[in-house]
Structure formats: structure tokens, C-alpha cells
Length: 413
Image (cartoon, rainbow, N blue to C red):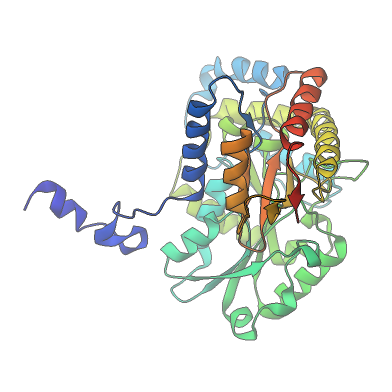
């Protein structure tokens, strides 16, 4: 037996077993990538407008970059960070208090750093999920916690985020049998991809549900500080009782333009945080201390995020206006840099679109505008306002060009 053959037979069933790597299905983002390449080849003189990017379009604040350089030059910062430094945890606790009005968070026992929120979400099921246990997820959404639940032999129950329910999960729709077996419930507000925001009333209902069924709430909040039009940043942990039932993950990736830096934190229930520390200790050796110190500087300067939010707010206003002028029913989101709009059914007198993906592919290939489709709970496409545009004048040019490209057809909704 050749080496290739025996290795092929060793893969775990969780990633496909003997058939690992043989799946010929083309996934959504690969389809987008291929369509973009084809559109550029077919229209080399037309610039592709990429509205599908899920990360900021600018660098981190110069003050944060300077702090990194300063701290990286210090020999005492060169070693293992393990479960983090007190300076970062203290900054995170103050950040929650000053920006989100979360009182009473103990920096030592109720906060810990993570190398971005994604690894944190990936690790947490290891502390709770045994074979047969359930994690409740929302769809559309970010699947990583569900993926690791399945890796551990658990099950995932998906609750749809529907427009008629303001893109909040309907807790009453969850079967009793699922609620009884569930250990974790993943939420994400402001939401990716819908841009919806949660309310105090909704979180109060979530807390009551968690207490009734003994479930840990995991609120993923990477966009929590990116809110608009006077709406104050809102934390799950600011709602009475939240710390009794759950934790919240924060990330500097989106709110501080620090995606590649990989730094965030978990906050909330001390027992959950303790378990996370133990799991994390067996997964990584901590983020570079200089990055933690630069991140602490950022958390102490929330005005950095406020400036970023002003830019996204302006872009959202322009994009919503333009999309509505060409027939969409676009609404400015409560937060995040995503605008989630229902896909048209057809072009008047022309082709039809059975799915959001059909429409997204049309936009790329025919209009050279890239978006991300979502067909989990309706037919939608997600526009991101993190498109490349240096300054307001360039932003206006991009939005005007989108309108020009979409104005020669009439969409049917």
C-alpha cells in the first residue's frame, strides 16, 4: 500500500474519514472567488467593486501601532504569555464599564484574553459538550462553535433568524426535547450577516430561558461597539442576570481594525471563564505580550472605535439610499459593517433568481459587484461597507458607480 493510500484511510470521520479531500462540492466562498476571477478576465478594463469583504479596509490606529513597536522592543515581553497579562485584563474590564456600562466585572476571575474570538468560540465546547449534548446556533451565522460541537460528538440545533422576527431567534420555537439536552446557546449581536441588534427585553427572555433549562449563553460581540445614530454600544453583560448564565466574547478585530493582530477576550461567568482558561492552556501559549499591551492601549481609547463607526455610518447611509433608489428595500443596520438585503426574484423581462446565490453570482459576473449570498433563512445578499475607498470623495465615487451599474435594469421583488 502506498503512503498516500494508508494516510487517506486514517482521517477522522469528523473531517470526512476515508473520503477526506475527495468532496467535489464547491462551497459558497469558492464560487465567489471563481466568479470574481472570471468577471475580471472577461472585463479587464472594469474595476470590480468588492462589497463582500468581512474585515476592515484600514490599518489600526497609529497610536496602537506605535505601542506595539515600543513594547515589541522590550526584552521582558519576549516570552510566553500563557493565559495573559493583568494589564490587558484590567483594560478590558474598564472598557466594559466605560463603553458598555457593565459594572462589577472582576478582571482576574471574570476576564481572560483569547487569540481573537474565533479560537475562543472553537475551544469553549471542549469544556461542556459530551457526545449527545446539544449546542443551539442561529442561522445564518458564524458556525465555528457548532463545528467543534460536532467534532466532540455533540449535536447542533439551528434556529432561523427571520425578517419577520427582527432577525432575533424565536425561543418559543425550540422543541422542549432540544432545550432539555442543550448545554450551549450561541448568539451574536449586532449580528453577522443581518446587522440586527438585540434589545434588553430579548436578552431578559434569553436569561430566563437559560435559567429554566440550565444552558450557558455564549454571546459573540465583535461588532458591539460599532453602532450608529446615537445608539449606545450594548452588552449582554449589562443586563441583570447575564453573568449568572453566560459569557461574552469581545474582539478588537472589527472595532479597532486589528483583524490580523488576533486579540480579544472572554468576560462573564467566573466558572465558565475558569474552564475556558484551562482549555485554552492546553491549546495555546497566549498571544504575544506586546500585542496585548497595544490592545490595552486601544481599549483605553474607545474614541478610536467611535471614529471608525462614523465612517461606516456614513457609508451605510449612502449605500442604503442608493440601493433603495434602484428598487431594493434596504435598511441601515443597528450595528456592524454589514447591510443585509432581500435578493430580487428576477430582472423585468429577463433572467430569474431562484436563490440569493443566483443573484450574487449575477452581480459579480454581469455588474462586477461582489456580495455574499445567504439562503439559510430566506433569500438575501450581504453588502459590506468595508470596500476600499480612501476618503469621502472616493466613497461617493464608489457608491455612485454602484448606482450607475444597477440602473440599467429593473429588478422584480
